[in-house]
Image (cartoon, rainbow, N blue to C red; front, side):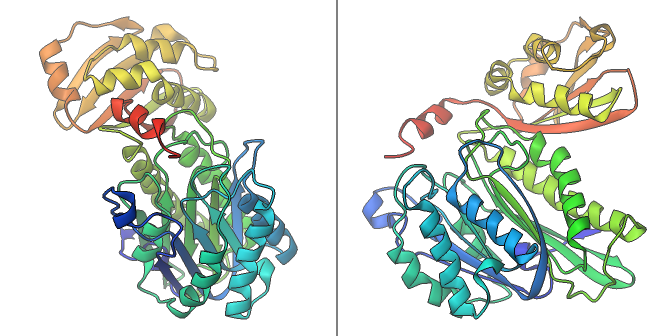
Length: 414
């Protein structure tokens, strides 16, 4: 298992394109420094893909979620291509579903495939009408420009308040065949997932049945994306899709074999790294927070405790202020919806600058405030919680809460 370049194009047979079509303001018109100008992208496979997806559990669901779900049901969970835009979420408008369907139809007609074999995704402002004409003009060019090395064009096209593109890929072997799993993600705010988070697209050239894709994705989402929180808000458009085209030439994974475990390990590697990137690029964030709960009685308890800490606004604010106020950790552990003995818990705070022991057996321990400030001055902070009550562990990711988060969201729409 090793890192490789290429993002969603790392796997054989996947090509991408991205462009500026006019959905976003141009840098000249906006008066702002827009580092990522692309606002629409397309990626596609040379072969029909077995596909799995998970979606937001927000009761208000974006039209792209509704249309994608219907398409995969009609196609038997098969897909060739994904079209995605930024700036407009295409959600809560009278014509939202019609426009999501048209986006699929435009790609299908241009590529000569069935409409239900296209996944559609949108991200941006909710409730503002999506201009469809720029997309109609862009699709022929997107299809024409599809290429195996254009993952960066696609990864930047889905950025909204993101400050950096997010992509990751690994290569590995199954049955002597070199395979790859690669992905790209977007997200900076409105992130508190429930079955999915932000927009995440993952590709592989492994041959994997739909059933096993769904199983792998469900299991890995639970311990990666679903363990991420930026601000406690679950978006209407959150989606993760996983496409497998089988072009690596390996035998199809159709059951829980050794090959399936290798594939899951690769998928977990990609999704974990994308999750960390999403957390580190939280709106206004200056620090990545990674909380690991170990020695828990069961996996769900470990997840619940770790997430409770990274979701605490008071703790997030303390980390921004580089204040080792560990009582806020104890408070968040205490209201976690799980059963455990608080009197057995140990807590450490650490970074590359060192480790501070703040709690043993549920009781605070003396520590140097000067040393604590030095440790918490780093941009990646690790919170280690040992329940001392079992063998399971889990990690959750988040970021600090800064003044800039309010500034960004105070005028996000305008």
